[in-house]
Length: 564
Image 1 (cartoon, rainbow, N blue to C red):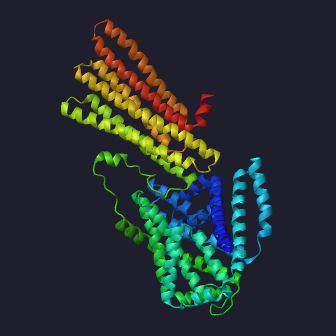
Image 2: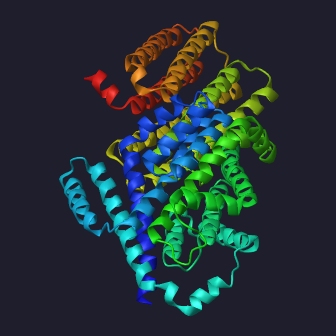
Image 3: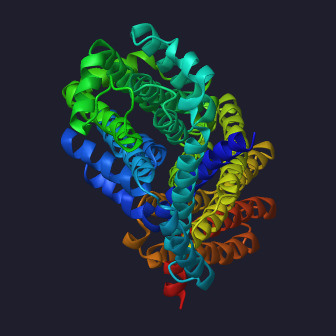
């Protein structure tokens, strides 16, 4: 019982160590890796290389997939480019197997303690804290590998007749291979960690419980199981996320099929390269672990080489399999979040990028709402006015829902261990969505003012109509600048451009207020008409303030520097 708990505890430490390592690396290099991913996918070979490089850097193929899907959704990468990146991610993730095989090859316990010490010092002093987190995760990983090796020795399954008899009952044939492949697939899908199953496989092989053939069959199952997890997570995601996950599944399934056809010759080839005889009664445990890592790498490298020339065909196939969901109404289509609907977007540091793309969509929706208000301002037909007013009211409801959904998502992301920069970004983004929702409220208030004018049969003078149009043109200008800031890089914008537009809006409001007093005194129009007109002007000016607040929230420190 104690040995069983040591085995399970070691696996838990292994998973935790890899998680801490991955998150620390993403905190240190997340933004730079995103830029790298967008810049280095100009062709298929560079796409594969980029996917492998990024995955090696963050030690998480899931993180690479998150970045890839986000770029596809943002139209920065095509689906075909994303497929090549995923091929590379499959190659990059095999580094984990080599790290584990190295852990099984020599006693690493002596190296763990100084790494722990350095990690704790870096974390406690605050200097290079993220590097300290990385070393802390690495320490747990190395410690877990050492414990697994020790536990495997204590198990000594090869000396237990009942265990040997049980596994010996599985003959070395295709039936056994398929059975262990299925077991590997199911266990990986349940545990949701191919690294944990790889460690268990190495322990079983090293202790002599299973043969190299059965171990490699488990590794093949792990390759399929890890893609099933992604597909399940992407079931409620957007179309491109589901297509990317499906491409990953098809890629690995194809690889398993051709390996099964050539299974025994291929395994013998890998064993020959590593220097072991798969038919021998006793095989060095170190070489067995290297054989598993070598197979994992060879499988993905050869599979990529075979399929890299068929990326367009894979793209067509996944597009045929995964059809886009059609909304029943225009309102449903507008409200549907595009970038953060799926559970596949789980990597905290990179999820912030997803949320920012959703905020860009929010800003574009507010721009369309402004167009509706402009159209309502000039609509004279009763039926057309009513339909347009109802549409504006529905958009205002959708803005409330978008704020709630994005805020809830950012709250979930904020619960994770994040870098200080990312925490600040989340605070800025929460302010952005709050101000965007206020813009939606303001546009609905404008629609209500226009309805009040219509119900009371108030006619504006030509001068008032022209002044109202001038104010909405300034709002259009401010809105366009705001959306450009939301969609672009902060460093590329100067907040003084938005301040200039805001001052124009304030200046126009002041001049119209003074002119309104004169016109009412001179009986150019009624006091009631003047009140409705100034309510509209004041609401427009208030909208301009909200737009300015969004820009300030987005530019953050840059805005503060300009104010200073």
